[in-house]
Amino acid sequence: MTAGRIIIAGAGQAGGWAARTLRDKGYTGNIVLVGVEAHPPYERPPLSKEILQGACTSDTLAILDDESLKTLDIDIRLNTEVIEIDRQAHSVMLGNGQQLAYDKLILCTGGRARHLPISGIEHERVFKLRTLDDALNLKKALTDEAGHVLVIGGGWIGLEVASSARQMGCEVTVAEYADRLCQRSVAPDISDMLFDLHISQGVKVQLETQVLEVNPTEKGLLVSLSNGQALLCTYIVVAAGLIANDELAKKAGLDCNNGVFVDGQCRTSDPDIYAAGDVAITRTLPAGTQMRLESWQNAQDQGIAAAMSILNTGKDYYPIPLLWSEQFDWRIQIFGHVNGNVRLALRQLASDGSLHFYLNEDDMIVGVIGVNAGRDFRFARQLVERAAKILPADLVDAGKSLKQLSDSVAVTL
Amino acid sequence: MTDTLNWVAVGAPAEISPDTGTLRVVVEGEAVCLYKLEDGSIHATQDRCSHGNASLAEGYIEDGMIECPLHQGCFDIRTGEAVSAPCKVPIRVYPIKIENDVIYVSGESA
Image: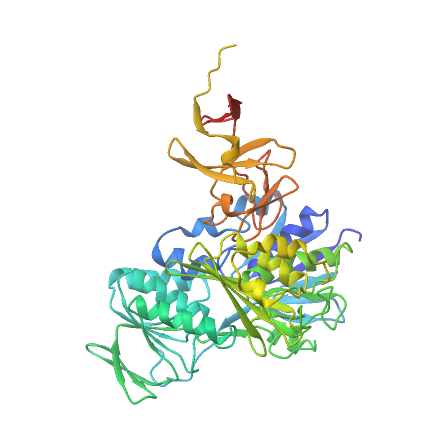
């Protein structure tokens, strides 16, 4: 490609890695990276953990700091966003009215925290957690006064916030509308373990519970719950999932459905427009399901994959979902298809950790979850990558080396 | 030539697990990971990944690279260079020597 311009709409993890990869792999044209936040690209996973708890500072999160932006010659535009795409003219309009032409455009617009239509929820003591600024605001509040935190939503962000707030000395209640924790993303055995973990650490967990109303009083926020209880808390954190920022793509007529559809080359329905990260709907392995992957791993890998595709050096990107979480002293790693129609084969590890293998109806290993599994997770992952069929009796037997089991199967995926 | 490095005995090559090829030791208060590669050579780097809070001794060795157990980023064991995302910052490599079946690591910079 002759030197021209690539515009990246969205300066999060996916946008940052796309920009870095384009330059690293030899693109010599103009790279414009447009971000609505005030910060250059940074990693979000520590926001709900180390940043809240004060175990690391925001400068350690940078994916592209000022120096590397300069070295890589990336034209970064912060505090603004792409508000319109003119596909015919190959140009975009920024929030400040500026028009910019592109050869290729990459949409890395991510998502935003879901807003809940609850009466009284608009209050200075009600927080969300998506951006660094969100995390710093919440950290300041929890540090100023520990108090009682109500977390609405028992998914990953909600549980990580609960874990952090608890470790900061807060009283914590989690209200989850489903009948188990992380219902959308994991099988019931892990939901139960998460529930027990949080209860053992003094978190109150209310399942099948919705928040009906919030009333500010002199003593705090008085919350009415759907189970008939009333709860007085100091803060509320809304962690009710993510809404894809696909409005820009929709307005431009690209194929969307709460996210932007992309092919294996990360191309949208317009061959000059790509998408990556939380906003993209991707075909995933092993089941071939089309879905958005709200994960650090996908943001990084798809950002890189989109850049490689543009440079015509990309392989097809059909990821196996990978994500992890840290809560109290647990490290949970998830790989593959671990929910829905799967059977469990549980291996207890000598280290106190455990590996939860999930098999489909053909006895093929389609996913695994490691709880404090350390290195063993590496081999467990390989079994998923190789679509292995291993006797469940061998999988659950900690005396059988996973490495040997993994070496015994050919690579098929 | 006088040996000016400050050598610390950390163990015998046989103590490096044949299963994992790694051994975590402490040198002058810093966690260090020892590696035994397929060619039999022994190396030492800082144990903590330069990206996340993880012990590289818990990682996986392939083709002279150590893969972090947490986010699967890789470092070149011989040079400490970060070779794959998300790792960008190199890890420290420590000089080692082996005398009378004892591995020595120098806590001073290579």
